Image (cartoon, rainbow, N blue to C red; front, top):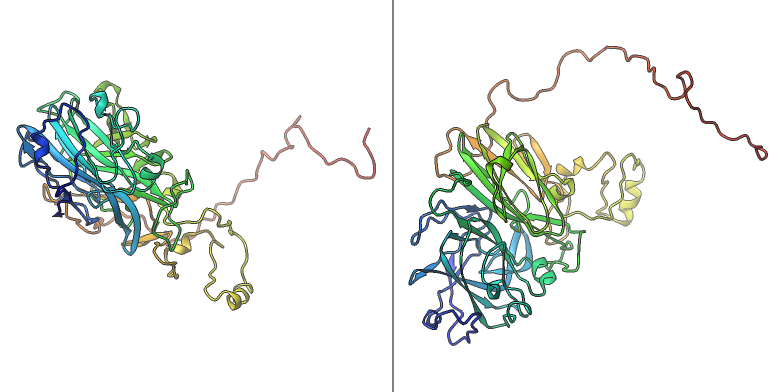
Length: 460
């Protein structure tokens, strides 16, 4: 992380008259981040204590305490995000990244956020799910004037309730959110809370999606549903970090959805409870065990479980297209089509032509084929037993008995104990004869029948 100051002599616009002129005398320097790695948790150096979150392939914004107010500085600006190794996308974000840094505060904190606009057009920030004064809600034209390029606005309010929230523009939002402008906001409870358990691991990420044609770098902002890059925090598998836990630890995962469709998030090997939404904690009497929770557009879901099953467990969106890489929606289904004798003829005209989908698409997981510039394979990622045939919204939960407490280091592939892995049957094939079918249509007494009409004339 590095720091830079954009503000020598910059004009400042004030979003609310309640903001002190003294506070505006010296803006806090914005922290910038260019790495796409998962940053370690930021333990609070000042202010009320809390148990920090780990933002998957993201980071938490540092703050400055100013007369008891927690001050942050967000810079809205064009960024270049590494979505996968070698695959770079032009986005708009905050403080060098998309999504922007996670903001972590404690219930009851007075928070002041300076927002500087370095975009080519105006913007605002809406604090999704927060209870705050109307003039701080961040809807351009309704609750405030837009932040013009080169200007800085100030938002100030008290974090009134604990929970998992988001921030994003409410100005030209179709473009700005499609370009990646979003971030997480976590309000931790002050002290103990009857509906909020203490956890040893607290992960958070946003669901986002882009339409980036192979060979290009800028998303197509007018796309509604035909996205081809399905991301968690603007990263795709296998570039998404794993979630790690020590066996027996209580784990919380916070997921926010700012795509244009819903995402059923599914965890293998464990069951969890939905313990919170962007409306706040879910009462214990309203919870039930699940292995999949649907996160609709504009929603937050907070799930918790005990990581008591060691192994490398899949965590993914259960929409199968969302666990693929860059794919074309117009590719025809070629299952069962015989290419024998055809490939050589086509390759005389198109030397790079390859057979795709004759037996399904699984062959592509092990296939090495040339790709257009600036994209990534459709089915990628390799595990200890071969190609994973996954991409997009997929990662792993790695539970280990010997994972050190507080360590987020990747423990590597799970070593399965002897006798606990599925295996190929080596005995004689099954010889049980197939029983005769007794439910053939039309054979039961009184069954309805169907026949073709006679040919050669009309039937009367």
